[in-house]
Length: 109
Image 1 (tube, helix red, strand yellow):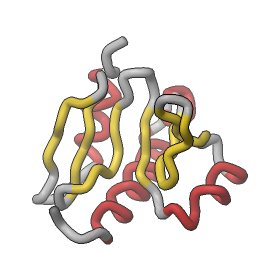
Image 2 (image 1 turned 30 degrees about the horizontal axis):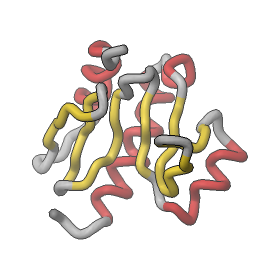
Image 3 (image 1 turned 90 degrees about the horizontal axis):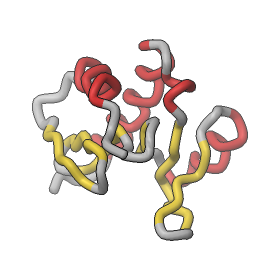
Image 4 (image 1 turned 135 degrees about the horizontal axis):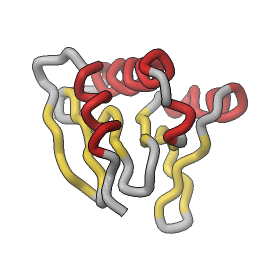
């Protein structure tokens, strides 16, 4: 399954960062800030969001986010959010802002 191009366009419209770079990977489209992945339109549907690993468990408990798994292993600092949970721009903006803020806090690559 290819990523949702309309969702990718919505993400793109919400990121106002001069270091933004888009990169196709794993069937999805990643949005990089300062060379660090911030968020992606997933090839499996929905979005993948990079978050502070210290906040991951709380976000899983208090939001519709789920742990992201790759090859059966949980990816610390990454969450998956289903498409229907980011149906509105306000819902999507919350996750985009969170991913961009965390990626922007990391050393540039």
